[in-house]
Image (tube, rainbow, N blue to C red; front, side, top):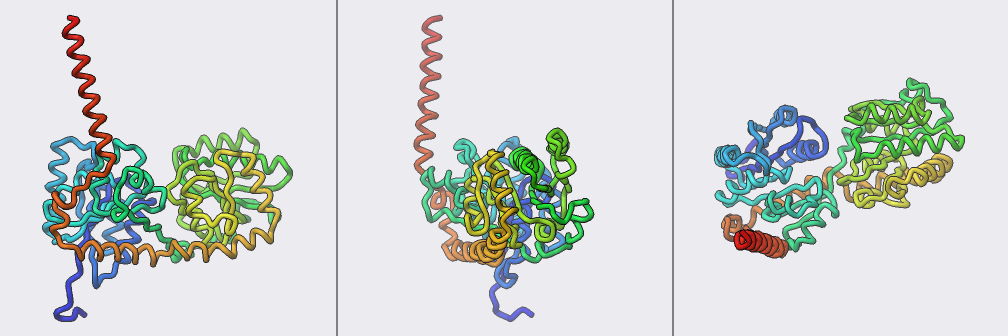
Length: 417
């Protein structure tokens, strides 16, 4: 029941551009819009992919489809149409804040938002490491850029973006989703013996996830006499190559490519002794967080994302990147030490709850929205909101020097002619 005189919820527009699937950034968006306090906020989502649109509509949230490419590389005429479309949505829903869930949509969203003097939040799910890309995606112009991990905002810090315009809000773990399913019979169904040790690897079958390193480490561990089995949850273009690698190494019967699973949490919890990730590049490492929450020890490659997500030495171990021997050693040591596995597993849930709960994820975003909405709208017009961090000075100097050199070169060529 609505109380007469109570303030109306503020409308937030969420902009997303991506592939037609539900993975990291899409799931983060769904988790957030589904849990916003309806008394304070309501959402409208702009996106171009039908799968995300359908998932948003299933939540009862309105969706406005963008039927053309609206990334930074869109043709000029197409970009003008998309900006007009965004402006229509902002006006029709009386939007008061824009949350850009993928930074490549900023060039389309920022101009209409600035004209209406609306705050813009840029949600960075990956670090924008290329300076040219940061400049042309207008990432510096967001009123606040939110990274899902510390290393994600590091390039912006290096550019000289003011600390007040940078935040870290960790992704939240959906414990209800993790609790679904029952994989207690999975080992037996795969013919894995009761005495075997089982490692679980979760992630798309793509090169940067480095499942090849994990398979080689399992083969090395088995060559030393231990029955180590590997369950791989995920799908992708590397599936055939990984299967061929397991066959070539003589471990095809011990490497089980399970494909995409909706019950990943159950597989980790019910069938795994240890969770392994050899990823070469990662944003935060959701699989690392999930395994810790489920009380399963983790062995992860030593990259920034894993150093941030894993309670190292408390709930799991780090090994050098792409080091098959070190991973095999860590795997053998951990599966042989039941007491250490139990200690790691017992410590995992508390380590995750401290920083990565879904409640914290939503609460921190709601607090950020409140902070930005309290400022006068005049603060978000072109003049007051536009920011030029030190990196721009160096970039502009470089452009001027390049143009001067080209002009001198053209002049010298003309003189010689």
